[in-house]
Amino acid sequence: MTWLHSINWFYSASGFGVGMLVGFTGVGGGSLMTPLLVLLFGFHPSTAVGTDLLYAGLTKSGGTVVHGLNKTVDWRIVGRLAAGSLPGTAATLVALSFVDTGSAKTGAAINTVLGIALILTALTLLLRKWIQARLARMSERLTDRQTSTLTVLLGLCLGVMVSLTSVGAGAIGVTVLLVLYPRMPTVRIVGSDIAHAVPLTLLAGLGHWYVGSVDGMLLGSLLIGSLPGIAIGSQLASRVPDAVLRPVLAGTLLLVGARLAL
Image (cartoon, rainbow, N blue to C red; front, side, top):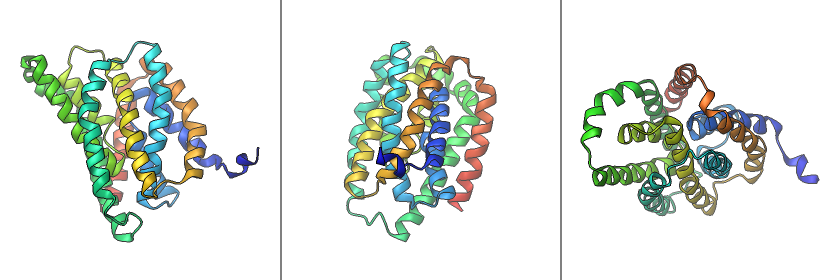
């Protein structure tokens, strides 16, 4: 039981809270955990991104099991997203292998990109209904082949963004999927997004681990809290007052994103 002495319970509590949010909405993994690790706990941005990616992959595995048992995952959508995201992730990881991820210059660059990604995520959350309404007619005219192609392209964009910042798979992914699949229940979109995030974040996280930007102690501490958190959140997903959660989450992301980007 000596491993218990290496666990930081403050990190575990943070993991539990963020895990609950991910289970509720499909949003909040990288969007909250990565800036939390950078701004509150003082980790280097590359370590925060790399550790958060593995944390998200393992955490969302638990959420995927719950959503799968509840039949709220569309595996066709998951496959289409993965067809774009996995090659995008692999290409981004190859590019990162030529960069000194631990340098101050790289850390500053990651902070800026992360901040911009958080602001985009927040705007996506706030404007989700407006975006859906504006694009509703276009999405209804799409053929299944066009929808499939756009889903693969969405996966490609998410693969690059998530590999660089660990942000984007939740809010941005869910919003675009709601536009592309307007007749699908939101809980099923959230479940599919969480399921897709598993191979995406695991591949990206293992790539970051390979280049040395993952903290094992931090990862273990986060998982102790996040696994029960996302299981509970996923089970209660259909009962969450989305109209209350979304503005609070978006406001938080705007403030944090501005802090990191400026």
